[in-house]
Image 1 (tube, helix red, strand yellow):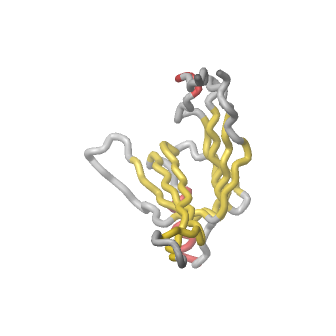
Image 2 (cartoon, helix red, strand yellow; image 1 turned 90 degrees about the horizontal axis):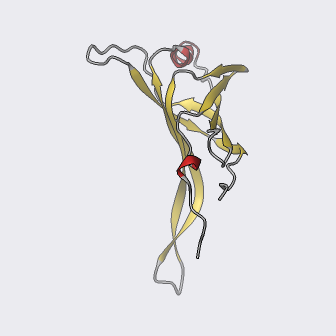
Length: 155
């Protein structure tokens, strides 16, 4: 019999934590961030072998991609886009995302995404039917690491 069960207090609250972007040595807290999600997708190749009627899959690479949903109150990513438009130089950034819900016994997790760049950026926006303007900013990244890991909950 398994006496272990996840307690509700150990579920991580989405509001607890922070996200920080570093561009060319400039560190910026993303106070306008509403949501961020980064995913790694494994690229696979189908492999058929003699003696096996099934098709197997071999991982041959990966792609890191994500989306930030932000309140439309900052110009930092717009400035990055305009700099590229003027100079042809893409600004890559590092994104640190920290989940830190002090009420949970699992501790905090700190994930760093490297070589991030936006896929698209909203340059201007108005919407008379929306009281709180938001924007989605898709991005890609090249590498990632976890600096702090969640621990097993206290049972």
